[in-house]
Length: 163
Image (cartoon, rainbow, N blue to C red; front, side):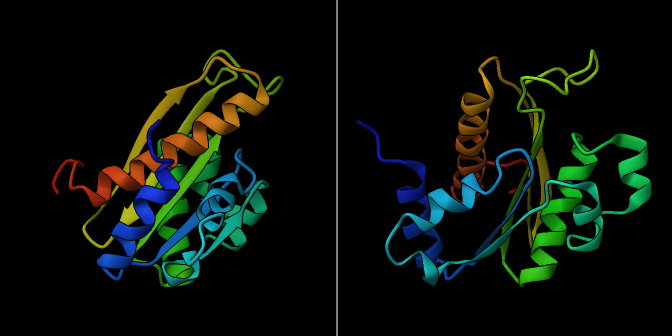
């Protein structure tokens, strides 16, 4: 069986002396939970923000109100701003963010249940990825957390554009 992603990224962050932070909406802290399940994660994990409400996204993560009004919480623009806000708030080298429609309600034709954006901000850039899961609420949260950790691993392995 493959090693869980949180066990893979920890040694890479530690070896590079990089610090990680999270900014989560639809995952409700699941990414931070998985990272902190690893003994010694305090060496590389600074903390996270569960910004479920847009006001928290604005007040804590400095996501501009106009950006949320124009693009909505579940958007590329918002997850980029959330990741950048988490970096600024915590002083982390790398921050990953998640915002999506976990379900079963809340979807729309433009943003169906399962629609999820994940952002990653680092000193050398900010990136975003889109997914649309087809599970129930718990599955969508788990898939989003897994994708967020994979995004961090891809960054650490130099697999993002421009890296």
